[in-house]
Length: 377
Image 1: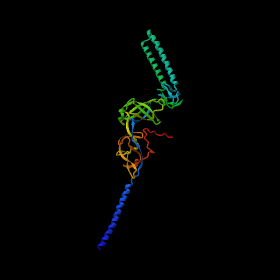
Image 2 (image 1 turned 180 degrees about the horizontal axis):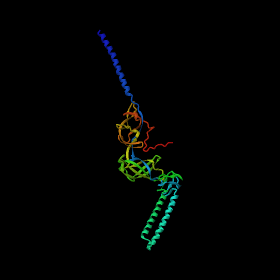
Image 3 (image 1 turned 30 degrees about the vertical axis):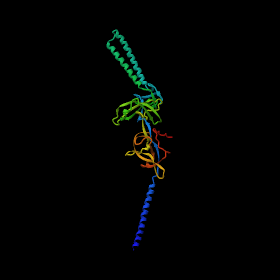
Image 4 (image 1 turned 180 degrees about the vertical axis):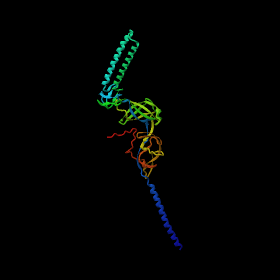
């Protein structure tokens, strides 16, 4: 009986030992298999952080306006008698542009001139008579007053006649004519615009905290959408002594030479003002930065670590950075990385801290300091 019990116990022990041994072996193999399964490397593009020399500048938006500009009109009404200009002409100061019919005013002027001449003759005759005591002082005083009144009436009528002639108040470039021969014009009707285009003003606003960075005579670079591949130089000619209480901005005026009349009043323009000495910054493409509410980060590709087999892999480490100003596609990094660090520029969405990576720069994001908008073909 005892022998049978021992045999049964041994058999049971062997069975349970086999079961537990198999489970332990299975767990060991599963652990080994799972440990051998590492995440596959993610393909990203990367670039080295490098120093770039940046010129600090202030960028603002403004509008161009003529040094002298006016919509020309007449003070009096009348019918157009002659037009002495063509649309788009360049005219000199004082040039006659348009006249109204003035036959009746000219006739009235001649009548008044005749009366003035008669008053002059009467005065001269009575003056001679007065010297020989033939007329009284009162008669001579009356003649003097009549002469002055006649001359004043002539001057008044001449002023009325002059108002029927439109002259260029300054030299400039004429716009498109708005009236025709024989047309009746009421007082104040715009006839043509006259703009002095060389030089030309650019008015823009800068924040009040930038006032100490701008000076009269400082150079500016101006760009307009009409000429995307060209920069127009100019210089600051005036700074408004008053800050706008609503926007807390201050108005600045720059003067630009415009000999070819490319720049026109009313154009929208972007102005860059260089301030201070150039500075060196560690720069990256803006696509390298992952912006988050809790801080901006980049993935820095560090040293190599052993992976499955004996093949080494590159590892991406997430790093917090402090960013500065931007310039085109570039951003300055003030803290967090140093020159020479290899930084991921595309593919960050696939990464986590410590993820293995492969670098493929067949397609890389742009990092142009002054990107240009491609023209429509």
